[in-house]
Figure 1 (cartoon, helix red, strand yellow):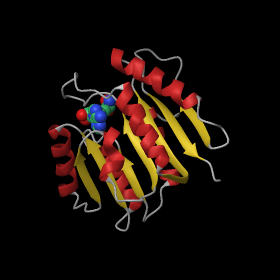
Figure 2 (figure 1 turned 90 degrees about the horizontal axis):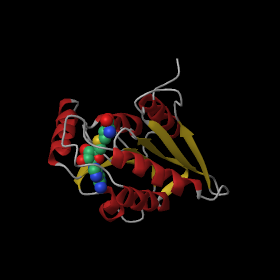
Figure 3 (figure 1 turned 45 degrees about the horizontal axis):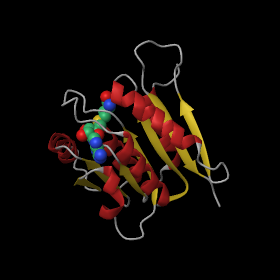
Amino acid sequence: MLKTALHFSHQLLSECINPGECVVDATMGNGHDTVFLSQLVGETGHVYAFDIQDKAIESTQKKLTEQSIQNATLIKDGHEHAVSHLPYNIKIKAAIFNLGYLPRGDKHITTTSNTTLTAINQLLSILEESGRLVLVLYSGHEEGMSEKNDVLAFAETLPQDNYSVLTYQFINQQNNPPSVLCIEKKRA
Ligand code: SAH
C-alpha cells in the first residue's frame, strides 16, 4: 500500500537521520514528531521543538515525561525565530514542519505563509549536506491552501545544483488529503 503523507514524511526523516545528530521539530503540535525524532537521534543527539501554544507544549511535555525522553528541548516561540534559540554555529540534519492548526485545538491559530517561509529559509541556512527539510502541507482549509501554494512556489525556485526538491501527493482523492514537500541539500 502507498504510504500516507504522514507516514512518508517519517520515512524521509528516518532515511536521513542518524544517532547523535541535531534536528528540529518546527511545529510541535501534540508532540508525535518530537517523540519520533528523539528516538531517531538517540541519547547522544538532540531535538529542538517549537510551538507558539501552551497547549502544544503541555501535551508534548506530557509525552516526553511518560516516555522518560531527555534529549528534547521545547521552545515556546515561533519557528520564524528558530535560529536565535539554537546553539551558536549549530548544523541540523533535518527539520519537520507539520503545518496547519492543532487537531482538536483553536482552528484560528494556524501556521502562515510568511512565517513558514522565514523559518524554511533560516533552517536551510543551517542544514547539513544531505540533510532534509520535510513539510506536511494541508490544503483542506483556506489559509492552508494559500500557504501550500506559497511554499511550493518558493521551493520551485531553489537552485537544482544545491537542492533536490520532491513533492508527494495523491491526486485522485477527495477532501484535499495532506501532501509532502521534501528539500534535500546536495553535497557540495
Ligand atoms: N495539521 C496537523 C497538525 C499541525 S499542528 C494535523 O492535522 O495533524 C501545527 C502546530 O503549529 C500548532 O500546534 C500551532 O500552534 C503551531 N504553530 C503555528 N504557528 C507557528 C509558528 N509560527 N511557529 C511554531 N509553531 C507554530
